[in-house]
Image (cartoon, rainbow, N blue to C red):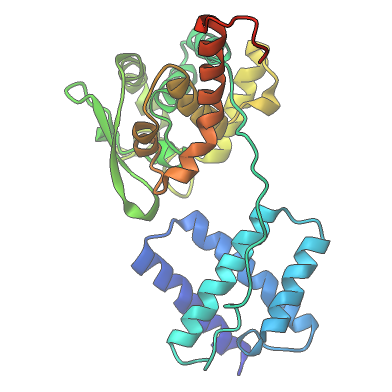
Length: 306
């Protein structure tokens, strides 16, 4: 079986993921890298990917662990391989699926990094000082991010019409092209309206753009890398450790601060766009802290040690 044919199989597989599962471009690129890495491993052992056995897959996963790869990245690699071999079996390229006996490595449960409410307020106040077009854009991005908890990919690709004065919600297209409604408050809408007055500065010669945050990138809108860079620069100005600030950390802050102030876990799940409640439950450490404080403050046995 030639390398050209194997390459065509991979491309067909990736096209299937886009068409049938609506996976994002970033996920598709990650899967492509994962399969390429496994193909290199197979080449080093003189075998073809389509002919790999369960033992070959097991040796590959052991190698990843031995190289110090994190459990979460190993799990994604294995997921890509499992889906690929399931595809090969369904297309009758193979008579069996060698990946069925493999199990994902257990992921360590890490609590999400978050910023305090005071730190987020400081970031917002620091951003608001800059009234230049770039400053107004960053303030709008920050206000919307903290008000909605959007994924960074969802934030930077918001359509121009997504934030309107007559609507108190955003219609967001998330993972798998699933739409959800997320409430947005007045401060965020006001920040977006202020930014819209200077939005033309970022059209880069275009007469118009359908994106709320246009740029001259390949996608036509602001990139996640640029937003991350600007947030770290803002953190330095605010006197906050820049390693603790990122779009994803602000998404964590959105969820944790909602729960800390009494929000329902399922409501937070829906706003974050989590398909499974167990994903949202990582934030319940905030609830645990709040409940401990309630007992400390109000239980009659105040001598109890917590």
